[in-house]
Image (cartoon, rainbow, N blue to C red; front, side):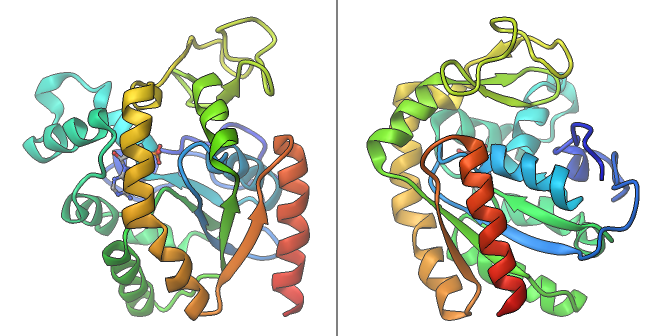
Length: 252
Ligand code: AMP
């Protein structure tokens, strides 16, 4: 299985939906999963571990916006500039902007390794649009993993989180420290505190989650797709719980 760091933003950066890093061999099953959960719950880390184990592509809309931020100003469209302002404040980017980005990459839905959607959908309107797209493309979601964690643990996680400026790998200063402080184990890139992980943005992001994203739990529950997972403990413990829950999905 492909254990190399996946370029999670590639699906929207490139003009064609060509995987930057497809699985070396076709996985036994193409998992098509949505990862739900509040900011800081560890979805990105779990998606990375799932990508390594299952071979499915990790697709993160948040990574796409961060990748756009590092482009020279002239290469960013007015819609992308506007999206980045929302992101800096910790607010959700308008549905229309997110949906037009996703709409450009429909072929990703057919990837033979399946996909892991991390940070999308984030509103009921986005979930309805995804449902329509998937119906049209004749592909179905395997399940929606809902990661759950008490608020105080989430705050501790976000404030200690560090992200690689190059490959986007995620670390934590106490629970998942890099071997060399502030340097990425995988690519040697410099680690940084994301602008939207600063306390003032985190408060706005949590409020946006409560108002706009939490209703997706009911949305997917009603469709029989929701798989609740306790996100406490180490990333590896959460990953073990995820794999057990996915076995349950297979036998349902
Ligand atoms: P994330 O890394 O998923 O926490 O995303 C970081 C930021 O990107 C969010 O706080 C939003 O500003 C923006 N963003 C990412 N995905 C979406 C989405 N599906 N809908 C709206 N805004 C998004």
